Image 1 (spheres, rainbow, N blue to C red):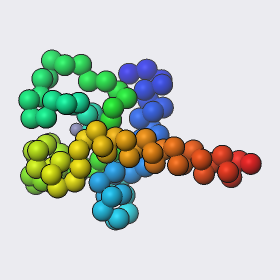
Image 2 (cartoon, rainbow, N blue to C red):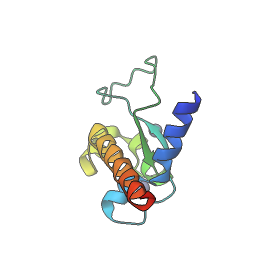
Image 3 (cartoon, rainbow, N blue to C red):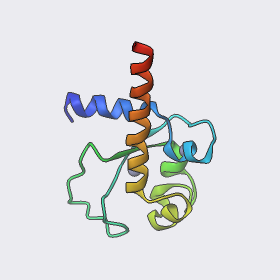
Length: 108
Ligand SMILES: [Zn+2]
Ligand SMILES: [Zn+2]
């Protein structure tokens, strides 16, 4: 992981959990989840994960919750209960863009 990866990761983490966000609860402190694009349940562990396609998820929505709550407890159930990983990634991009716009307005 290089400096740019780390900076991106911090920006994503600052949003807090994207699922909490959608549920309208105060976004809990997040950890990084790497998206396994298009692989669904057939996760190929040999495939190199990239450091750009990441989601901020709180521990409950990431690994500690039950099936349907935590992504690592069952991706299919999780996506049914919440949204597709890639769709959520687009939301992350949007939230970050909004933040940057706000910042620019304040900066002016
Ligand atoms: Zn959460
Ligand atoms: Zn993960």
